[in-house]
Length: 190
Image 1 (spheres, rainbow, N blue to C red):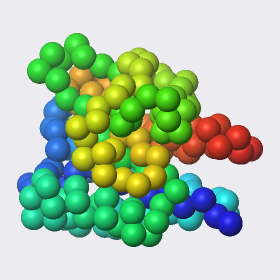
Image 2 (spheres, rainbow, N blue to C red):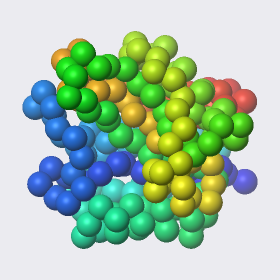
Image 3 (cartoon, rainbow, N blue to C red):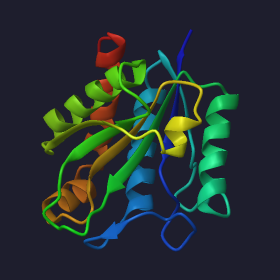
């Protein structure tokens, strides 16, 4: 039986509601769409997985507000039902020196924490971002309302010049790293 992965490409396209962060000429919604599409393609080519994405085209806008956008994504994952929920984001800070990758979970001591650690390790190893650790944030809607282990991956900081270059040029590598992290977590061979 295939493992069902819901890939949530965080936010919407630039100019739409819930478009996400901007920095260094980049838009979060465009990066997350691309990384998620790459990840979906990688998972699709592995018969052990079934995959669904929250956004099926770069222009697709989900919801009419931040709240409805998040609710639709979670509802789709829960109704499928997915075995794992991976939400892809990029970070931003008013401090341009802030950089690195981190993964958020609802609480520690869970399956999601082990998944988050494996994904973060693979991103840091493959893309070379700074390891900012696995962090809990129970207020995040997609972590709080999903009925399966869920992680929110902050790939890197769009507001940091060096991270922005990685976000622009290494989108496939970020996606492949998430895939490797998932395989490592599941104890599967590449």
